[in-house]
Length: 324
Length: 254
Image (cartoon, rainbow over all chains, first blue to last red):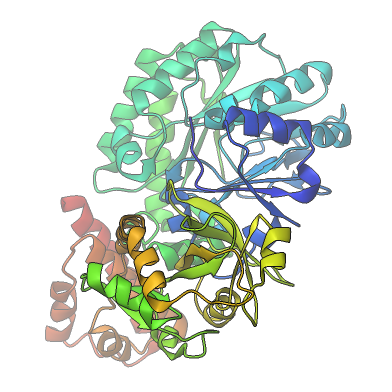
């Protein structure tokens, strides 16, 4: 069970049934009452890198902005109405390169307890919504049950299409009845990258067995070779990853695949570098292209082409999406 | 560095006896935190813990403060799990009386917390300030606790205090910083770098340093064949592009 050094609760979230469930799960009645989540989450000069080592939990109510338009550097998989939803901000794992550390002023985990208000707002519109861009909901599922609730919502609203992305193995999620309009996206990285730079996430073998579990239970699934990270032996690492992946999972049951090298907004990277001055991933001398840091075009092309071509040995290239 | 700030000398003396660590500094700031000059020299790797007695319920209990109860409340970060109980603190100009303490069982009262916060937070982050308070009295209508009593009280909680300080030190030692390449300005001048170019160069040198790639060979070669210093900025840009390729090729050899 996750143990948070401190729990903050917004006054107006205190009586919410979900708050009570979370406190019950954490077996605690100790918390710090706050007026507004921003009083803690948005304090100046926080160190998200340090906070991520032992994050605190903030429970709050979201009053607006239940959906945000998808960013241009994110995959839209051909959908026009592409949005993302942020019901939890920040993640329990600690990937070196995670853009959340540059986007949010805090490393603490902010949970909006009023998920039902998101559902009311979204309704049955023809939207493609990514619900776990700003967090990984899987490791929080025993505490929040949000994956389960999003899936139940999707079942009742057939027009929407949800994507739930993860780097975690789960045993319980695959026990629910699989909805047709929810795609589970599995982020895959070479084991060397996972071990060195994706702290707190499941190892490659667990991720692959997780995909198999999802496939066997009838869940739609997507593979994400995104972000591709440069290291001195990137080619052999990604070659082994792709071989291991397609020799383990059932390729016929994969919906589609996304491929993209690491890219990040210049503002976010600047913030991340401020508190992480020794990571080889975020301190790579990237090229700044229209406000986004990316690998130099030549290296980027080389890496993306390599991964794309290797994937296409196993999978229909029509269903492999490159981010640019 | 861990800076322990105490209001009273008798509080500091009790700590001096038991804490002997070159990374820990113990200072007195006086009642009402009148002397806080020292905090202006702190950096992002430093941390302050205000340790001292306070008024409240449960005499003899030690608390970690999770909130400073003020017109604009403040929230010091708590970044590791500890068995020390948490409580809110309110800072007063005068000593708390018995009635005030009795009417506010969930509060601690002192005369420094808010002042230390307000002065520190101007340039430190909320993760850099903590408060450990030991309840010495339920409010004082007549007699204030004696120096001897306060010192002894602090000593009864010395193990809790030492554990807290040690854990904090470990956490802050993990903050790693990089040092700037000493040749940066020399190379920058030789390449006629603009601010943008210099930032790019700085990042290249930083990455090379992390990956232990020696860039001297690259620049020495350019120096020997008189490619640098360059005459025009655009030639400097070309060299920065080549440096990118050099770093990648050297990295691929690792």
